[in-house]
Image (cartoon, rainbow, N blue to C red; front, side):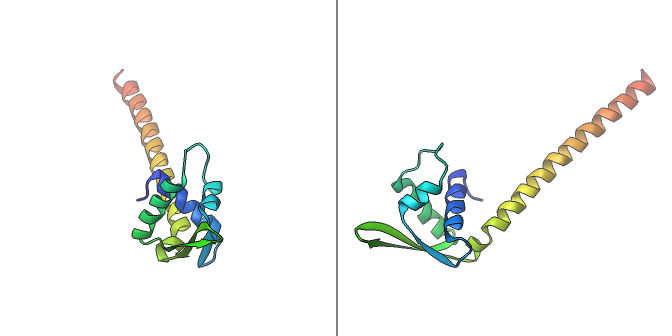
Length: 119
């Protein structure tokens, strides 16, 4: 399970790869896609990218182009399945919320029935 920051960075990488096997991006490209409410910097993003690489989401190669640091990212199987897993996780959360709501309504109705019978 990815942390909130890893999830945001992985979403940015997936978006930048745009359905292809890989992409060539700079740290500024990734920072421009990330939400501004969290104070990301190049070092923090690089650490998160390395963590995601170790988790098997993609291969990461660092290179330079015209003096600017660039990342060559090739998505692996976990990287391709990222969006599907995110949607599945969201469905699971909605299922649990609906189950809790149904349980609360059932308990309320059962309480009213008991009150009507014994009260």
